Image 1 (cartoon, rainbow, N blue to C red):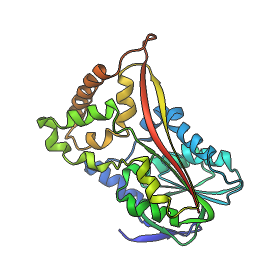
Image 2 (cartoon, one colour):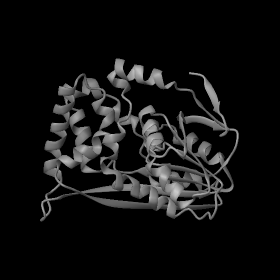
Image 3 (cartoon, rainbow, N blue to C red):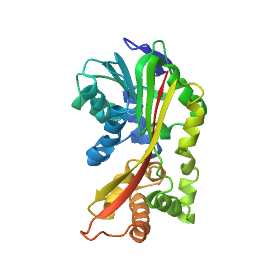
Image 4 (cartoon, rainbow, N blue to C red):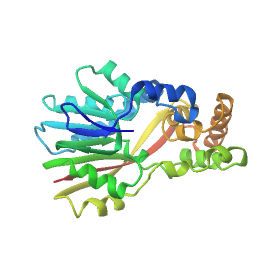
Length: 286
């Protein structure tokens, strides 16, 4: 693919034609685009970390903000609410997510592009990313690159999931390792990039003037164990499901994960299931 500069933004991103993406999706299940409607089944729960991250950014009136991996725009809308006068750009590689963002928030600027290898001809007061960088590799170079497009006095603000030790994630790995599935799912585990808080501290402390770093465990209240599958289908389990040959296989895989989760997550006194989800946050200032 060729690169292009998006008019008015100074962003150089990997050019991705919408019609080409949709064609590939129809031709190849391993190239599935994201499903924003499935993702937004848990809108409040998925948006809350964006609210918490934005609240910790100590900048009064940033003029320019870019939301890396903006998804369907729920996180970008949080930024609009916090800083209504800022120039906002949402960037995501998913055509479906960007289409949904444009439908719900037509007054903002949305770009389809690969955030993992873009450069910018200008800087932003806030470089923001909520639950996106875990899908990108080489954080040793990616994080400094994103920090480099923060303006002097600006910030890189990021939230990444840290749920790789959760019983749900372990259930997915356990099921995928079975012989009947591993021939399809081999290598999927390495597609998600989980790091520790210490890793991000050592990466950013030498190059930032101030660094705020914390972890939060969110306890999501789900109606039943099937809520765990609904939650993870469009996130951590997605990369495994899209490798499987047909819908029947995907349903069988999900049912095996669900069976393991029934043993790991107990039903509470009110019949609900608690799903603890750990996330890492950092705000690095120039």
